[in-house]
Length: 440
Ligand SMILES: *[C@@H]1O[C@H](CO)[C@@H](O)[C@H](O)[C@H]1NC(C)=O
Ligand SMILES: *[C@@H]1O[C@H](CO)[C@@H](O)[C@H](O)[C@H]1NC(C)=O
Ligand SMILES: *[C@@H]1O[C@H](CO)[C@@H](O)[C@H](O)[C@H]1NC(C)=O
Ligand SMILES: *[C@@H]1O[C@H](CO)[C@@H](O)[C@H](O)[C@H]1NC(C)=O
Ligand SMILES: *[C@@H]1O[C@H](CO)[C@@H](O)[C@H](O)[C@H]1NC(C)=O
Ligand SMILES: *[C@@H]1O[C@H](CO)[C@@H](O)[C@H](O)[C@H]1NC(C)=O
Ligand SMILES: *[C@@H]1O[C@H](CO)[C@@H](O)[C@H](O)[C@H]1NC(C)=O
Ligand SMILES: *[C@@H]1O[C@H](CO)[C@@H](O)[C@H](O)[C@H]1NC(C)=O
Image (cartoon, rainbow, N blue to C red; front, top):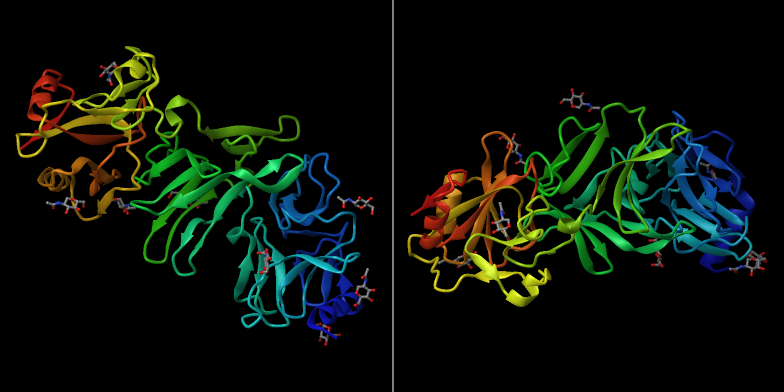
C-alpha cells in the first residue's frame, strides 16, 4: 500500500465527526460538510460554504453573529469541491487537510513539514477569527495559522507585513468575483525596498501606495488619526515589519478588504438593518492614482489654478503640449540653467505632503531635520528630504536620490517635504513668507 492510500484509509476508518459548537479539531476528528466550528465567544464560525450564486464548496471562516454571509478567510480558494463530499481533518502526520472523499483527492493542505508536527496536533478557531494549528495537543507551539495565510481580509489583531525571521510576507488578494473566492487580480502587499510601504496592485501595476510609516500614520493616509476606532501598532525591527490594529471596543466588527473592484475598504458592522458600512477606503481620487502627475510634480485637488497637477518649485512640464491638454503623466523636469550643485541652492518646503515613493529613498534613523538637510545638500544627487518620524519633535531622515514620484498635498495631516531648488528659485519663493527656506 502506498503512502497516500494509507492516509486515505486512515481517514475513512478512524475519523470521528466533530460535535457541534466545538472550536477545535483534534487528532482523529473531522469536519464534514454541514458541520461547523464556532469560536469560544461565538464571534466566528468555520465550515463549508458556497459564495454568492456559486454551488462550489469551500472551507471558510465567517462572522457567526452577522446574518449576511461575510467570509473573512478561505482555505481552498482555487480548488473548490463539487458537492458535499469534502472532509476537513488532521492527517496522521499532523497536517490539516481538506479532501474530496468521492474522488479520494486532497484539495488543500497546511503543508507544514511533518518533522515539526506531532501526531497529536490540533487546530482551534480563535475568537479573533484566527484558525491555529498547534504542533501538539497541549497547544503550546503554533505550527500554522490562517492569519499568516490570509485571503482578501485584514482582521483586527492580525499582523500584516513581513516576518524577517521566517521570511513570510503576508499579503491580501481580492476574490475573482462575489461568486468566486479564487485568486483575483488585486493585491495589497508590503514592499520593503527603501522604506517599507504597502502597495495596492492590479496584476503587477501599482495602483496606490500608503507611503512610508511616519511615526503617526502612513504618510498617504491622513485620515488615520488617534481618534480611530482602533489602536494601531507599527513595528519595524530586526524581527519584523508589521502593522496591527486592535479594536478599542472589541464588540465592534471591523474588517479591511481588498475588493474585487480594486478598492481597499474598511467596513464596520452596523447591525442587521444597516449592514456593513464603509469606514474608509482607497484609492479615493485622481491624486491617489500612483504617479498620476508624473515625476517632480505635485497633485493637489484643492489647487484650482489649472488642474490637479503642478510642477514642483524649480521644475517645469516635460511636455508643454501634453501638460496644456492636462495629460500629466510625462511629469516635470528641472528648469534649464538652474544649477543645484554648489551654487547657493537650498530647499523649499511643501507642507501637508504625502512624501514621494520611498522605494529608492535612503533612511537614517538617527539624524534630526537640520542634519538631514545638511546631508542632502552635501550630495548633489539628493533631490529632496524629510523627517522619517514626525511624532514629537520629528526625528530620522529620509533622502531621495533621483525621481520624486507620487507626491500629493492634503488639506491637513500631511507632512513637510523639502525640495532641493536653485538659488534663483529660492529668490523667487522668498516673497512668500509661508515657505521656509534653508540654504547654504
Ligand atoms: C487516533 O486513532 C489511532 C488509531 O485508532 C489511535 O492509535 C490514536 O491513539 C488516536 N489518537 C488520539 C489522540 O486519540
Ligand atoms: C459536479 O458534480 C455533478 C454531479 O456529479 C456533475 O454533473 C457536474 O458536472 C460537476 N461539476 C463540475 C464543475 O465538475
Ligand atoms: C478511495 O480509496 C479507497 C481506499 O483506498 C478505496 O477503497 C475506494 O474504492 C476509493 N474510492 C474511489 C472513488 O476511488
Ligand atoms: C501544498 O504543497 C503542494 C505540493 O507542493 C502544493 O501543490 C499546494 O499548493 C500546497 N498547498 C498550500 C495550501 O500551500
Ligand atoms: C488603546 O490605547 C489606549 C491608549 O494608549 C489604551 O489606554 C487602551 O487600553 C488601548 N486599547 C486596547 C484595546 O489596546
Ligand atoms: C497651483 O497650481 C499652479 C498652476 O499649476 C501652480 O503654479 C501653483 O504653484 C500651485 N499652487 C500650489 C500651492 O501648489
Ligand atoms: C550621493 O548619494 C548617492 C546615493 O546614496 C551615492 O551613491 C553617492 O556616492 C553619493 N555621493 C557623494 C559624493 O557622497
Ligand atoms: C518616533 O518618535 C517617537 C518620539 O519622538 C518615538 O517614541 C517613536 O518610537 C518613533 N517611532 C518610530 C517608528 O521610530
